[in-house]
Length: 268
Image (tube, rainbow, N blue to C red; front, side):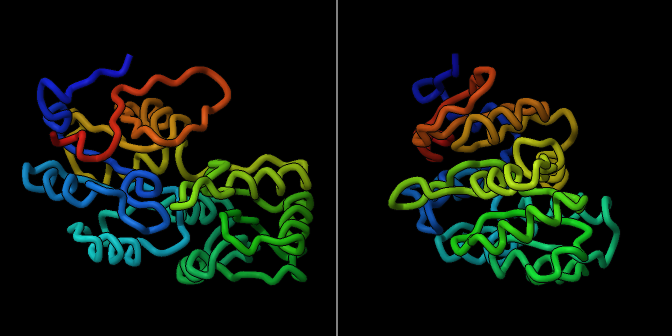
């Protein structure tokens, strides 16, 4: 069973540093969750380094850091690791620099692809795509589904940031990237490569940015059992579940190393 430390000592004393999810842990739709700023300030005060690891590439790491700063959290761009970064590297390794890409996602995500040197295609040019990259965005439509699935069916490399079916927002759970990926996979008959949590590359990148010695005690704090906790444990670090996401992933049972109600539970 997850261990409870609230009456013994701060849970943070058990670790040298933390990887921390953003959506559902630090904020909901960029609205800060109560106590998150105070907890992160307290971690910094006692010398516990933090790297924010998120499957969301809707905006750049620099923009995410700016929002954290607006909420009173001392964070810089280099402390934010997104699945967009690992997706770009995986795609570059698969299809090469400057490849033609059909991408589903926000304008911010597409700008990151352009900055990385990829040529982005309109839906009408799906036949030219060397890769199809799928992320969530609120204006996903049939034209995008058609272009992505036809390009993937024709042999384009198919990859995504993750399979989270939902994403936590202030008014409840919204459809997440996983819902869109499922539609593309169903229509194309192909299975997407996953670049973000729960796969190892994003955890390895987060640990590299954290910069602690290999034998350091590190934990991932997240609100999902499958992507955050399960992925962390498979990557060789502890997984701490922040309660509140009621979804239960299919497959083998995942048991978090610890459970907390909010980030303040790490330091009190």
